Every structure is written in structure tokens, then in C-alpha cells.
Length: 209
Length: 224
Image (tube, rainbow over all chains, first blue to last red; front, side, top):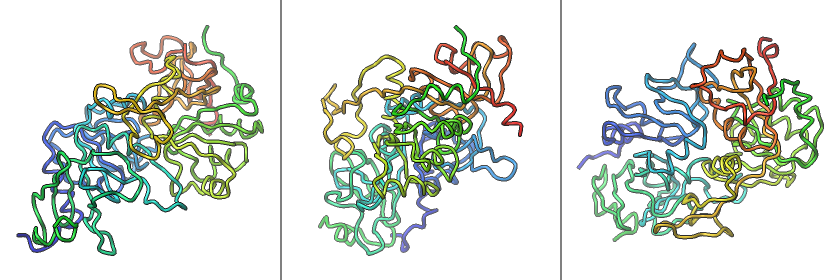
């Protein structure tokens, strides 16, 4: 057993190494963008950004910054050889039509059945903003979640039932977290690996035992 | 008929009080700032705006909102670091928000341009954004009924137009431009350059002139 939980970079590295060569991948805004730092240039993994581009390269710096070349988080990025641009209806046809192999999203909560809550923390004073999260979660062939397994107060984000507003039902295939990698399939969870915690303690803390 | 080549002020005269106006752009990329400035100056009010975001900083859509010309906005992602003008209007109940998932927003716009009244999509099933909407299982997958938009005027930021009114875009500034141009009853595209017919490769045209009513040549403004 690994004695320490994974750092955010270590989680990102694990996700990158598990993405098959040749995949079309969308990385959600926030934490999942870290994954792009660990994708090998020769891996033939093609990044999709839902504002209208395939073949997205690393973040642009210095003279490469072009305010008309941005990612879904509105950060200036670069274009790799073989890149293409398209309008929003085509971009979301790629997502809904099952052409995006994997999306990696952040989460407030994931339920044991694979329901995802990641667009609204549930505070009625928040201004609701959904973006492409619902399209990605329900449309991508596989949805990976990248998150810390417990919130700041120690409460599990993997829950029997989400209390925050849902993004999509039964859509999460795998959770990559600091404490564990967990598969969800047919409404069942299966712990694949644990980091800095025993499987028994983990199941206790998420309320599975 | 080829597109007409007119000023921003002339183009904006097609917007009246209560019009539904679509604005291209994802954040500031592809936002038609010159046309929005003309819309601000026109004083048209009680507008319904369709756009992905709800304004950035104090220019463009944010300025239009700050002018209190907008009654309602349909968008997918209003809250941003620099959306303070919208945030205040929303919190004080001075603007109506219809929140739409980004892909559903795009497809509702595409549907209008393609003459499709409504469609079923799996996006949003089982969420707050499907409440009150018809859900039907199609091929075993639950899907939500979503209706085409009703855009009167589209204001779009393009890159280059030819004198026929064919348009090409630049990088991710393309975003909503092509679908809004095809959807609206009257479509205006601002461009940074107009070239003679024949200079744009017909194979590379993104928005054919049939979808464009007016081109506003902003070359002088961009140069400054």
C-alpha cells in the first residue's frame, strides 16, 4: 500500500497514463486541465475544447498569446499540427454524438450509482452557470472524475445520493482521487487502488461498510 | 442577392424595442464589439439577448447590460470572474436569466437556422434544467424536448468577407458565429476586411452569403 495520498499532479499523471493512445479527450475546466501537462507529445491523444477546436496544444505564453485562440476556460492556448476549428453546433455534435472517447471533469459529489453533481454547489445565492458540463457528462463515451475524495471538513464526496444539483445521472465511469481510484459500473463501485488509506477504512469513511 | 455593405448604425436599425438579438462570442473571443457599441448607442430596449456568457468587464455585452437595455438573457455560463455588471443586475432582480446547457443552446440556434421546430436531446435529463420539459425514451435513452430559438437579429464577429457576403472566421473566435448567422431573420457580420469576389477559396467558405444580410466592414476601426 502506498503510504501517502496522491498530490493533484500525481492524480493528473495517473489519468494521463491511463488514457489510450489515439483517444479524443475533453478536459474540463479547473483541476482536469492539469492532465494536459502529462500527456506525452507522441501519444496521439487529441484534445478537444468545446468552444471549437481539436488538436489543442499547451497554454500560450509571451508572443504566442492570441486572444482569438482560447480554451473552454478562456485561457489562451496553442494549436498543434493537425488541429481543426469548428462552430459550436459541430463541437457539441462531437460530444453528444459519442465521438469524444473520454472527458475528465471535476466534481462536488458523485453518487454510488455514478450520478454527477459538478455545476452548482447548491447555494441559492450562487449565480447558476452550467456551460458544457451537462453535455459532456452525458455525451462522452467515458466520463472520468478528478477530485479529492473528501471535502475540507472531511466529508466524503462519494455519496449514496447527491445533495447538490445533478449534472447528469449514471454517467461517471471512474473516479481518480487523492485517496483512491474507484470504478463505477452498473450502479456498483469497485475500489481499484488506494493511497495512504486501507480499503477497509476507505469504505468506512464513504459509508459503504 | 449579395449581402448589403452598410454601416453598423444602419445595420442596427433592424433591432427594435423587444427584439431577440443573438450575439456571437465565447467570452470576448468573437464578440461583435463594434456592432454592440452601435446597439448601445441606438438605445433599443427590453431586448432578449442570446449569448454564451453574460458580459466581461465593461465593454461589449457588459456595456449593453449596464445600459439597462436587456430584459432577459439566454446563456449557458453567465458567472465569470469579470461578469460583475450581470451579477448585480441578476442579484437585484433586474434581469431574467434562462440558463441553457451550452450544447443545447447551440443546437436550439442551429435548429432555427435549419427550419427544425424542436428536438430531443439526452443532455440535462434528470437535472433541474429539465424540470417542466417533456421527456421521452428514444431507442431506450431518455431525452428532453428542446425548442428552436426565435432570433430576430444576429450580430456576428467574422474575420474576412468577400463582396458577395461569404464569410470566414478566425480560430476559436468562430464559436457561435456560423449558427447564429444562419438562424436569425436578419444577420449582420462585422469583419476586419472585405476582399473582392474570387479571393476567398469557395472550398474554404464557412458561412455562405445566403445566411448573411449585411456586412459591416470594420477595417478602419480595427486598424486603429
